[in-house]
Length: 157
Image 1 (cartoon, helix red, strand yellow):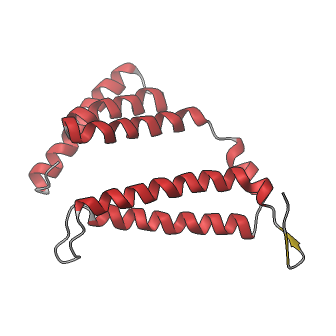
Image 2 (cartoon, rainbow, N blue to C red):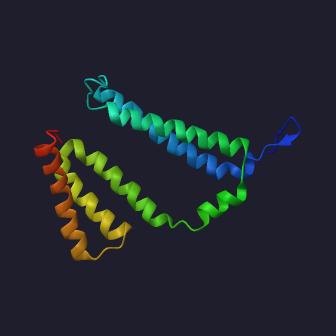
Image 3 (cartoon, rainbow, N blue to C red):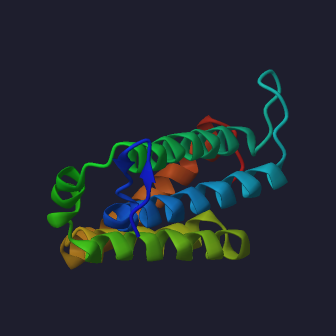
């Protein structure tokens, strides 16, 4: 399907994979924004738990919308092909699965119990670290983060 506007052909048909990918990312940012709203925003002087996640997700929405508009208005098929031609999608899928698992487990079992398996999966399967490195690092990093946030920053996890 090629539409003509002011004598210029729209290249949406050749750009649909990029636009679809950007729309999925935009949907994830919208869901993150709505989730952050449920935590409460507060104000800059007295922020609540959802303020910074909301601002970050809102910025992600704006940047993703800019990508969609740029792709539709001024498509560059060679740049898009070059961008995605060397991507190994296995680690990306593992990363998305690990983060999704963490987000599901976190409210149920807490930061440490959800963070250790997520860190292990990311280290072992997404980055290819050795078993020993993956196990040791997956145990140390979440514990160190937990201790840093709870003891030094006085933030409940």
